[in-house]
Length: 259
Ligand code: 13P
Image 1 (cartoon, rainbow, N blue to C red):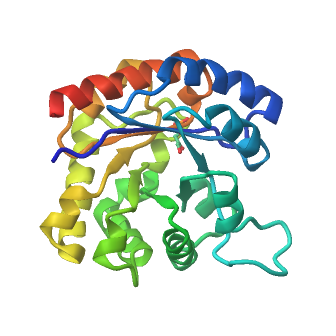
Image 2: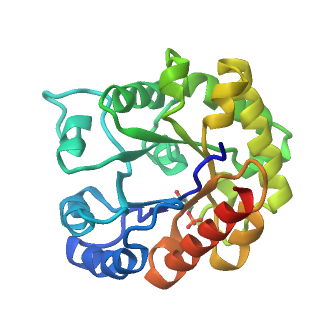
Image 3: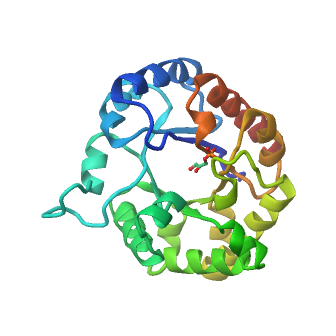
């Protein structure tokens, strides 16, 4: 069975709840109830309830951008998995490079959050990716392997099928520099190989691996046509309905080709 293409928008720290509703409305109207691909929008926490209310009867899924690994208690400023579930959140981005770089998230923390998400039936979108310095020092595969092994520690094969991986080369995020389709495919194939070592071929073939890093309407078709690229995690281009919807169309076209 081919892997369902996922097009996910990471709105990062953009959009008030009011602005988020304005962005979500045309997306919902256009995407409506299609079932060919999975479309996810990840607004900031403060807009989850508003956007969640708007997408309630559509096929668009709601994602958060981060989550605590703790269930509840004295953790000021944190948000738990059950709080997200209560707002009908289905996906959660974990270990984004911005959280690793600016908020000190280590593989160990990302792993704990991934386990907490899975235990609460949320689908983690686990981000991995190398910096420019690491790529230039030929360390890309080592970095990715460490992030994968650390991120999946203690996660069973059955649980692993529910994890979505996002390969986001740090040097391509928000820079306009995209990995070429061949460069991205090379790393995606490597990720699948590592997943095969961890969980065997059947499970590895089921896990979706998204590409993120300056994905735009004009480069999406080429990226999504690669064998191991199963969708996109989109930042900048997810902030306008027109571009995001063009990416949804690219996802549908890729889905037809890969069927
Ligand atoms: P850009 O699409 O803006 O490069 O961001 C990618 C990203 O970080 C998605 O999580």
